[in-house]
Image (cartoon, rainbow, N blue to C red; front, side, top):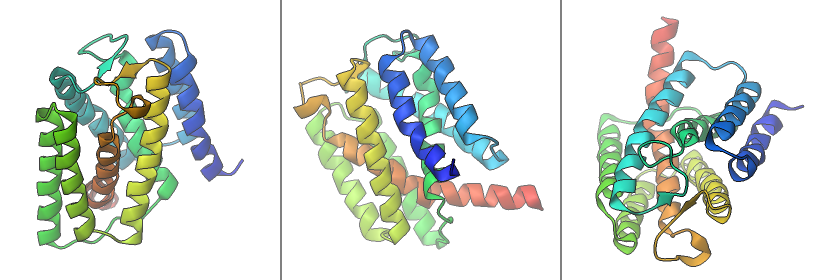
Amino acid sequence: MHPRLVLLLQVPASLLIVAAFPGNWAKLAALLVLWALTFRALTKPEWILYAAACCFFSVMNTLSLRQGIFAFTAPDALGMPVYEFFMWGFYLLHVKRVLNGAAPQGTLRQTGLVWMLALLYAGAFAALANPNILLAATSVLLVVGLLLFHERLDLAYVGYMVLLGAAFEYTGVLSDQWAYPGHPPGGVPLWFVTLWGGVGLFLRRLVLPLLSRESQVSLS
């Protein structure tokens, strides 16, 4: 089977596990086996990406859960099911492998702007509890980001990340794995678009250059 097709099949298989497998530990075990078989060997930078994403988004999830902007129905620790601690590493690694885009060569000024936007993004999701204000704030940040960075691959990373987010968000809500307050249309608030889209943009503009430098250090 073609490697790209194997990667694309990760998504429906992971969705099925999250939605249908009984018990959080069973979900985790099945997900880890699936990812090990379909990702195959990871490079050192990819291991760093996976571990850093899991750690960062576990902290962000914890802060967001304390704000009450969403809740898991069967948490194990820190308000999250055990498998959730491993999900964001998978999301970012999956997108990196599927799109396989080269790291952009940004100027020092552009790098500073990306870091500033990323910090503002993280602050918004950690501090804002009102979904309308959160949507407005992160929409402005995403629009600014796309005005600054809108190469074809930037748009590809944003667009694919939003599609991936829609698949997991609606599957998770409809299968009663997590829920959002206020009964938004379809069960998922619109700010999921800015969350996942922003992550896609920062993956390309912030994370990939860091991983590229790590690869160069490893080879030297």
